[in-house]
Amino acid sequence: MEEFQLDTKIVSGAGALEALGEQEAKRVFLVTDPFFVKNGMADSVIRASRASDWEIFDGVRPDPSVELAAEGTAKLKAFDPDLLVALGGGSAMDCAKAMAYFSGTKAPLAAIPTTSGSGSEVTDFAVLTHGQTKYPLVDKRLRPDLAILDSDFLQDLPPALIADTGFDVLTHAIEAYTASNAGTIPDLLAQEAFRTAYACLPASYAGNKEVRLRLHMASTLAGMAFSQSGLGLCHAMAHVLGARFHIPHGRLNAILLPAVISSNAPAAQQKYARLARAAGLGGSADTIALRNLKNGLIRLRKDLSLPQTLSQAGAAPAQVWAATGEIVAAVLADPCCKTNPVSVEDFQIRRVLEEVTGHF
Figure 1 (spheres, helix red, strand yellow):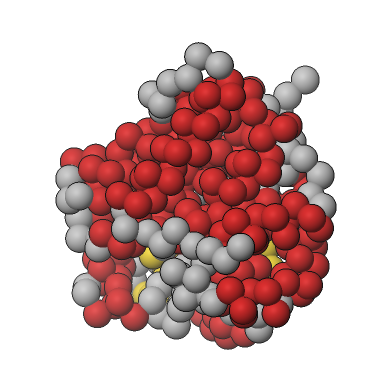
Figure 2 (cartoon, helix red, strand yellow; figure 1 turned 180 degrees about the vertical axis):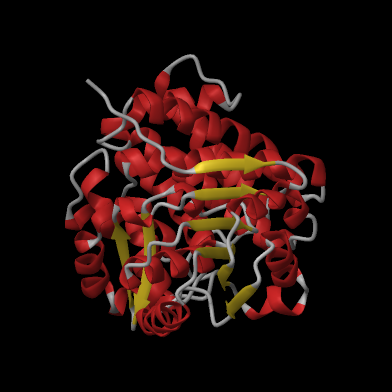
């Protein structure tokens, strides 16, 4: 028997923001970053909510810290809203989710993603940083009540951000599809998310705004999938390396993913092959389809001007090797390893690190 539950209402398309007013909230607490205050999007959200009283917490930064979440939690509790809104990328949504969780607020949470990557608008995951460690939080109470996928928020995304976050979508889909907790419904969601993202990402990066809502929806589908199935070694390593070397999460996924696929292939070759065929990469034999999947991702990474190695992303091989013991221990402790298709061992992490440092 399988069980699949999604508690988030999803509203999508141009003008989807108007769904915020249907919440009939009088007091709105908005979590965002300074960019969206400066460009007027925060004001647009407040107007759409039709609230008579509001407060904006605009302290969100990339990789939000435990301390930042604690600061926001205190302000949220003091304001006592009847609607909590997150506006931004994964960092804003994760911060708002953590604040809601730690405050114990009964206010519903509406998530408005402005990038296509994290899928946080439909997941029960959030990630906070403390020092050089990222802490994934997993709890059903972290899942937003409303997700607003408004294409109007996607028109002016810079290409580099589209590349980074787009590879996060691909990685979410692949890891959910091959996770040890995978099931029929999450598999279907993950496969469609991968197929759509692989097809739309190059066009979105090149400036085609017509495909951006489809990529946005693929991100949400992948979020729905991994929220049920879990993730794997690629995300575990991206969490650890991102906190230590301050490399954007999606960029790290792009660097790590082909190497992780090779590492997991003995247990997941058939599923990798199915994804390759779903994306039009062909391969009648599973071994050929697996090779095509890896090569297709490497080619896409180059087409999106993403770094090929950790050293190209700013982490020198000497820095990586000096910290290898700590990195391996932290990766093994990351909850994402629990649902990797093969049991993660010390040597597997070291092998992936060797492949992605660009130093043999």
